[in-house]
Length: 98
Image (cartoon, rainbow, N blue to C red; front, side, top):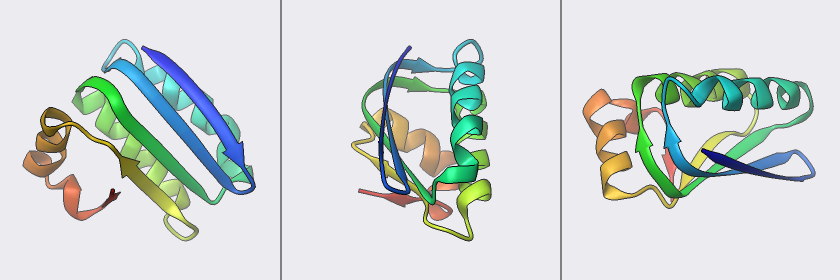
């Protein structure tokens, strides 16, 4: 998985390419942990994300919980496959999507 990060004021945009799964999610989780104290919102750009596992979902939900009282999480460009994972798990009701 490739992670590209861009920070603008209190917003962190994270673009992911490849698979967010058991193997790669710890890397993303570690990266986000560094930013939580200084950001209000995370925008995940999933345009190039091929696969999302339950381990990846946990990282996204952790981000939402950490930032819920601030700007929260926004998911952009989720493919049909990735969107199906959010819908089947019920997490589509907890997150914002564009």
